[in-house]
Length: 104
View 1 (cartoon, rainbow, N blue to C red):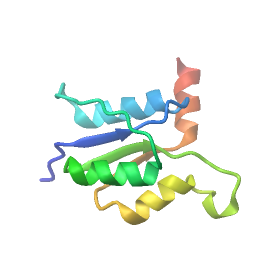
View 2 (cartoon, rainbow, N blue to C red):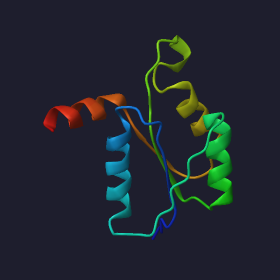
View 3 (cartoon, helix red, strand yellow):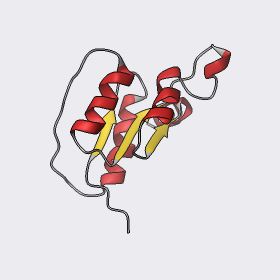
C-alpha cells in the first residue's frame, strides 16, 4: 500500500487556492502536523526545491489555464512540473474553483 506522509500544497492566493487546500486536506484525511512556508521566486524552481528538501510524497496545486496555445491544457508552470517532479502531482483545474464558489 502506498503511504503519503508529506504533502506539498502549492498555492498562489488566487481564487483557486481555497479549493486546492480543500483537496489537500481530503487527501490527508486526518489532522496532521503541518508547516507553512512562504517562498518567493520562480515557482518551478522553488517547488522543485521544496519537494527535494522535504521528501514530498504528493504535490497538490491548481492548474491555471492560459491563452498561449502551447499551454492550453495546464498553465506553463504546471506543465513543466509534470515533466520535472518525481512525486505524484494532484492538479485542480480552474473550473473546480468556480463550481466550489457557486455551491458556496
